[in-house]
Length: 440
Image (cartoon, rainbow, N blue to C red):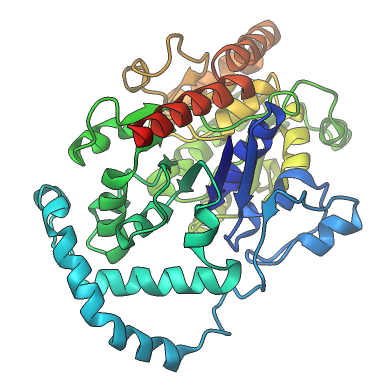
């Protein structure tokens, strides 16, 4: 079986292809994203230093001995700001294509009709023009999508890439991979949102990785059986308990408790202001030598830094650029506790990565939205308010045995319910289903 993974936000396409190849599936990954978090080098290479958000990492990785395998399909040239685009020619071409796009909109009128009340806006010719421009930009970097996709048994489209499906592509089975992109995007008054909503409907199967979006899937008219839950890809053979270099450094600096929070600083999504307030009380009342490790990424880093200063805990908070995964794994191992987020009630990669490394996790966790996809709930500590977070930190700091117990339970839970083989097997079941559906 040949599978192509397209779009690589958070390296999910790369990881799924890598794990599927381990199981004998001929999987390739088309990595067309610019951000450092979406480059395979971020996942695999032992990179050191500070990198710009859209810096190309290949040369840095090669310097430390890692190069991309040949099954990673890259871009012909690097142009994150689109400075090499033929702007005038592009617009002339759009004008020439308007009649064809108007016809395509007519063809999509009926499939889109049931989405109109949910999305709240009509599909427009201009939407298809934007999508056509996106497709041509991509094809200038990777070649014909029609020819590329036609060489595979299944094409899996990540993030916003299912928005390309309404344009019409090679007639192969398509799987849409949702990783947070179903929460809001399909309901926004934006061309990519409208086409993404339609793209989910035109996919042969939708993979949901965030349990809380099942309601949105149903709103979009995805029938039971047309979507399935699969956890985010995680290689627990890499993410595992082991000694930590960072832990030795922290203790050498005189700290006796390490709280790690890798989440981004967007308060309305992650609620990290609540964590800062809880940690300030924890330092004042319980552990004056505790340290909180933050990463300076997100829209509200300065706001978080201002709150840290206001609460007088600058000496207990250390800031770092985002860590490549090799170094993040070491940080998970170093931590006494990992804090994820405190609003949404579910998790992405941080919580299972930390649990796989044997570290307890404190986060907002809504058990009810997880029961449909996990037969056994993960052993995370549920906390949302500053008071609840403080209480969780105090209890865990006072009880080494409880931290060890939760760490072991978390590792075992990942092995049973989030391990790489489970993720591959569920993908394989979906692929066999959609291929058989096409044959019929």
